[in-house]
Amino acid sequence: MITFNPYAPRLCKLVEVKTETPTIKTFVLEMPEPFHFRAGQFIELTLPGAGEAPFTPSSSPLEHDRLETTVIRTGSMTDRLHEVEPGAWLGVRGPFGKGYPIEKYRGKEILVVGGGCGLAPLRSLIYQLLSESYRYRRISIKYGAREPDELLYRDSYATWTAERPNVDFTCTVDAGAPGWTGRVGLVTTLLSGLDLSLPDTVAFVCGPEVMLKFVTLTLLKEGLSAEQIYLSMNRRMSCGIGQCGRCSIGPYYLCKDGPDMNYAAIQQYENVF
Ligand SMILES: Cc1cc2nc3c(=O)[nH]c(=O)nc-3n(C[C@H](O)[C@H](O)[C@H](O)COP(=O)(O)OP(=O)(O)OC[C@H]3O[C@@H](n4cnc5c(N)ncnc54)[C@H](O)[C@@H]3O)c2cc1C
Ligand code: FES
Image (cartoon, rainbow, N blue to C red; front, side, top):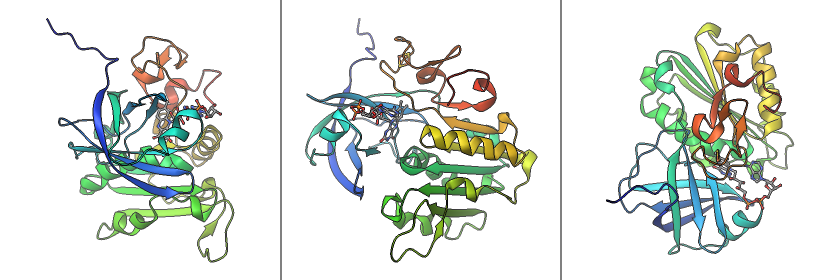
């Protein structure tokens, strides 16, 4: 009898590498068989000889023959990954985690808030929402990066909103640069005085931990309840399948119960931020 081995990666060919910013690249993989995932689920990516790490697909969940993931260079595995060229073979396990419960929020106002590389995991959610934007009252995307050079997917912003009157996109940078004419300020400055129908709004937030904390505090101050806020808890993980206990927060395993958690479910635990 053949049994499913959750630790065995499937081999996928790297077909393209896109340089997004000086420290961030998008890796495009050709999938050997149709790959299905929900926006917000993650994969474990293996670079033979360098190890395995969790990343979130940044491509559309509606595409099944190729998978993109956008990776910031931060340490031993990601340094090696950034050197890899098209033609290499990488391992993919998953998808893992639950994914965003977006079906629950059809007809509502959706607020997508990204910080830095946190826009990458949110891009698959954005693609999903845009593919059925008529189902939502409004989709507002707010994005902040440290500086203009670090803004991800700059060529896409106009296409996300084009011919979709209920979709808006605003970005800001912590510090401007010569030639930058856009907003300057932290991503939280995009969240004050929001013109939203509060009881009907849900926010999906992804970014560094300090950003998650201050965005949550701002949204609560703006009148959203904890139940209306989902946070991507992309903490350190190992097995990805609820076996090793590395990613626990209260009674939850982020790899299995998350990584996107409703703030109401986790707010009482000490190690949330
Ligand atoms: C569910 C999930 C989804 C993720 N999705 C993405 C993604 O789409 N794109 C992306 O670039 N990264 C993502 N990450 C983070 C990514 O897994 C880490 O950056 C990667 O494991 C670092 O490996 P490394 O060997 O290069 O770094 P290491 O050498 O292990 O560490 C280098 C530095 O990075 C820090 N670090 C390592 N892992 C994390 C982490 N999970 N969170 C914060 N800091 C960390 C370490 O503390 C250390 O300071 C995700 C993590 C999780 C758990
Ligand atoms: S990563 Fe092992 S239990 Fe979550």
